[in-house]
Amino acid sequence: MAATAATDGNRYIAPADRTGNESIVYFTRDLSAEGLRKAYAKVNGNICGKTGIKLHTGEPHGPNIIPRAWVRELLEKDLPEACIIETNTYYEGDRYTTEQHRKTIAINGWDFCPVDIMDEEGTALLPVAGGKWFENMSVGDHMLSYDSMVTLTHFKGHAMGGFGGSNKNIGIGCADARIGKKWIHAREGEGQWSVDQEELMEKISESTKATIDFFGKHVTYVNVMRNMSVSCDCEGVHAQPVVTPNVGILASTDIVAIDTACVDLVFAMNELGLVDNHDLLERMTSRHSMRQLSYMHELGMGNWNYILIDLDNDGKRISLADAVAHVVPFEG
Image (cartoon, rainbow, N blue to C red; front, top):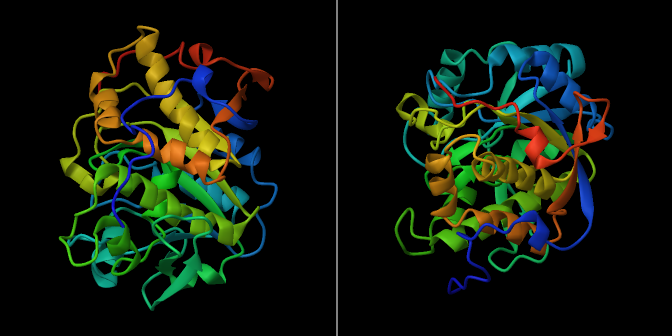
């Protein structure tokens, strides 16, 4: 199928130019285990049964992943029966095979709860309703044994995706290593990374749709805007230096709303003259990453309009400007 861009994914669509309904996104500046728990508590109403925490556990010694102590406290106090869920990587490296992946998980200290590598034993197909690229997506078959999923995401840049939010965490992170991830990144009979950028954004989003449709109401999202390099956590110790200020933690039951809010906050910091976000903005607007947001919206995965609720100020509605007013240039 030829790649046909429905929109320019390098063009940022400002909130005033979006149409449709609004969802709720909760926000706290409290970057700590307590802040993480506070945000999660607002969106956990439908999390029940066997629960997987979809978390990017990172390459060996990765400096920017969500702090292990935060995740440990969240699991111990709020999700004591849950486990972390992951899949192996499409690229060769320290998480390519299950054996390599488990060594990396141990190095990075994810030893306080079970970690389920979902494609360790096989794959399963989930339907992609309304997709133009896929009828089904191949995922790790262990995922089908879960009742609920908490998507815990380190929001940051990404070399191919422009940014990595909840959409990338699920769309790439739940697709199995050898089939699903290959479908997303490569056209049949072509090279390993042969899709163009708009096509990649759409394929990631369709993969995500398969997973969140499977869980229905029993999936929720928490994005941590901290240590936001232009590099993904898949680059580990080779990630580019962090130059964007830390912002806070967001939570929502709407994947489109939460990823859009994170993007909006990055743009707001720059537009208000608080910091020079050139590196992250350039990464986001040169990889067609905005197509993630517009395509998820088109697929009916959620609303890209939202109401931002300030958990640090009695649950009042807050503007983007107020949400980033506290930031200062990042000094390392």
